[in-house]
Length: 235
Image (cartoon, rainbow, N blue to C red; front, side, top):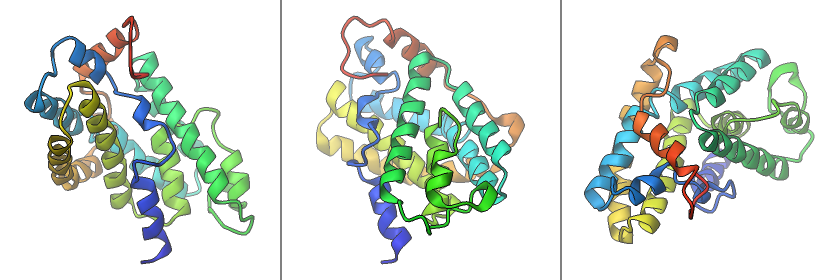
């Protein structure tokens, strides 16, 4: 198994220390409001979001961030990073995205300290310099794009990885909140895995004019979650 493949295992591991387990992305409110109550409704929520959110927001912007890195275009990278954060329609969703991006950034700094390891970001300086010379707030997809460049992960695999991390976090939250049995959770995760090729294909075909949030239920549940008196999750 080559180096990039071994590092991909680390990236998709649920033990990746980026704090994804702290967030439910509105699912906690959806459960408390009786919108998600069992395996069937959890499937509708998670696969529905996967189909209507990931291919029009996270994944196509991830592809554009990755392209900006390949083209050594730092202003374009910063522009797509800012746009992705602006697409988060609630304070909690923006906080989650920036917090996970910062966590992955910190992890990269700890794992890639070799000053001779070339990241090949704008200006051609070394890994450590590039990892310090980034926008003040880094979206998680932007941090993933940097990881993909640093660890030689191709765009399709990077999109699959992004979608898998999102789905695994959602299902882990559903297991706690609904609650779901662990076997039901694993079956649901396999169902989402079957969606990955279509999600990546849709993201690849998404034009700039088609970018944007298409899951209003998520936005409403996330906004309502901000004022819940008792919460297990941060979003």
